[in-house]
Image 1 (cartoon, rainbow, N blue to C red):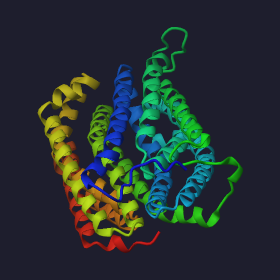
Image 2 (image 1 turned 135 degrees about the vertical axis):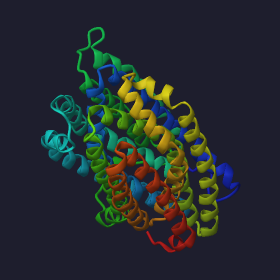
Image 3 (image 1 turned 180 degrees about the vertical axis):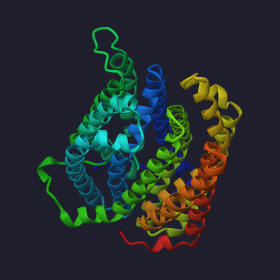
Image 4 (image 1 turned 90 degrees about the horizontal axis):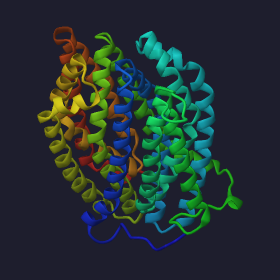
Length: 448
C-alpha cells in the first residue's frame, strides 16, 4: 500500500472535508450531468419513453439497494482500519467486497431478467411504456456487474482518503456515456437505432470501462490500496462483518424504493403525463442531492477514520460542520429551482401538461431540499460509524409511515398537489428526526 496520503484524523476539519467532498461533489455533478443529458435525449422520443426510463429507474433502485449495502459496510470498515493505521486489513476488506459484489451480480442477473415485464405492469405502466422499458431494464440487469464493481472499488479508494482517482475514472466513463447515448438511441451513422434500450447499453459500456480501469489501478500496486490476486481468498468472518453493517443500509434502500414504487403507482393514477413530470422532477431533485451525497460520502470516511483513531468528538464536529455547509448549498439550489421552474422543466419536455405538472412539483417540493441534505449527511455519518440500524428505523417511519399516509390523505382532497405536499412534509420531518438522533451521540459507541 502507498502511504503517501493525507492524514484525515489531524489538522483542519474544514480542509479535510473539502479535500474529500470537492472531488466527490464534482463526480456527482458529472454523473448527474449525464443523467440529465440522457433524459434530454430520451425525452426526444416522447412522454412514453420518459415514463419508461423513469419507471425502470424505480425498478433498478432495488439493484442499487444491493450496491448500497456493500458500499456502506466497505466504507465503515476500510475507514476504521485506515484510521487505526492497519492497511493490510483495509485491503482484505476490499477483496471481500469484490467477492460479495460478484455473488450479488449473479443473483441480480438471474432473478431480474425474467421479472422485468411483471414489475412494470405492477407499477401501472401502459403497454407502450412496458414495451420500451423491458429491454432497458434487462440490459441494465445483465450489465449490473459494471456498476457494482465500479462503485465498490471507488468506495474503497474514497474510504482510504483518495477521492481524486475515482473522479478521474468517472470523468472518462461519463464522457464516453454521453458520447454513446445519441449514437445508440437515435442510430446515428453506422450505429443501430435502439431507442430507450440504447441508453441502457451506453451506460453499461461506459461503466464497464470504468470498472476495468479501477481494477487495473488496484492490481498494479501504486495506488492507495493494493490488491494481490495471489492472496485472494474468501474470508467468511470478514465478509459477515461487511454484511452485518451493510444489510441495514440495504433494508433502508429497500424501504425507500418501496415508498417510491407506491408513490409512482399513486401518481400513475393521474396518467402518463403526470408520471413523466414526476420523473423529471425526481431527476432534478437528484441533481440537488448530489451535492449532499458528495458531502455525505466525505463525512462517512471522516467519521470512520476518526473513530478508528479514537477521536469521537472530532468525528461529531466534522459531521455538524458538514451539515451546515450542505444545508446552505441545497437550500440555495432549491430556491433557484422555484424561481426558474418553468424554464428548467421545459428543457426536458415542452408538452403543456408535463410542463404544468412539473412546475407545480418543483415549486412545492424544492423548498424542503435543505432537510434532504440534513438527513443524507447525518445518515451517512451514522453509517460511517457503523450505525446503520438507526437510519433504517427513521427511514421506515418517515417514508412508509408519514410520507405515504400524508400523500394519500392529501391527494383525496387536492389530487397531485396533495401528493407533492405529503412528500414535502415528510422530508422535513425525516431531517429533524435524524438530527435529533445524531445529537444523542449514541453512535460513538458502535462497534464494527
